[in-house]
Image 1: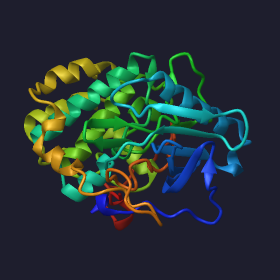
Image 2: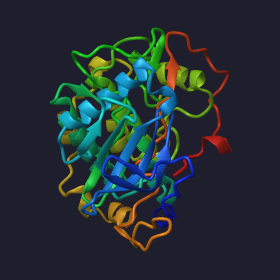
Image 3: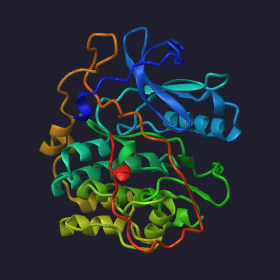
Image 4: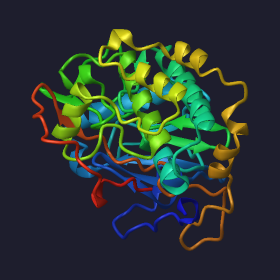
Length: 338
């Protein structure tokens, strides 16, 4: 099970400390940086993200990393891990956020299967509330997906604001490319238009489709094929309860003007109890042990080793996706991983 893993051991090339934080192990890695489990002098566990040395002198990568730190600091919500400290003036560039125990939504679906409809509705309402808290600050997440949601005992947490953007901020992605993850990136973004709050609502709907079915929302295959289906074909909701399916379809309307605002989504969910009290959710996030730090005794509430380890966003080509001959079938490389 995903919540019985130990944190990966540090490797010889890893630092033993970053700032005042002792590094205890690896939580995950991506194209931009490495994420470590760290401990403050007072014993607090944190997630420390360090930008890779080989890209630390790349202006766009550094600007994106600084943007992530600024966004996390700006967006203070019960649905986001709080920024604790950051060092952005000289290499090594790093930021430390709250360590949130819990599996990613993707890992939870893999371990426990699709959510029951009522549980999925409660999750949808909670995530919509989280997006509303982000949008009120003039920020769009731009990469909401199951791997960027941590299921904590208190409720879901949105992570990885590496490509989030404020309304007044400039675009960092090269012309002709669309930042995001195939299958969750909104059609208008794939076609080269701006990513506004409605694009986050599309990603919310796609994320809930995966939650309710256990399948990729627009099938699998190469990025161009998945992106083509996202723009031109219907989302996969086979077997989803009609009321939940109808709400997801509203969120993934091809025209962003037709998508509901997060507040409307919350109202339409009609939930009468919090997600934290949901039996299915509780079984997924209930901590059975402690974090297993290499070389140490157990130290803290158990969490998925991958909870802060979402893979870096794939940049997908916009304005030119080729039509696939058929909907790709899932292969071993396409299955959700913890």
